[in-house]
Length: 113
Image (tube, rainbow, N blue to C red; front, side):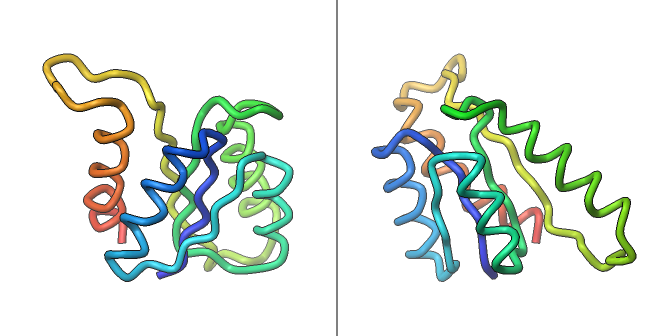
């Protein structure tokens, strides 16, 4: 499974990417929406995992563009699930946001697949 991961926090990006790769996923990681969109033009992805707040805009903007492109083309087989992950704290969880996000991504992707 090939994953496009968009995250601008280097430490978090590295941790999540390493966890995903350790689980056997192929991961391409980018820090901006522009770079992610260029990657989507160049390759096919099974899952798009993205941050909501990026330096060049809102991650949901990319989701909207992907859905619009899917709906306006004959490519009805496009079904890459897209997960947005805020790095916000979760109440009642003593782990850091980095630890929660890095450990929670693999189960979320497995549920999607």
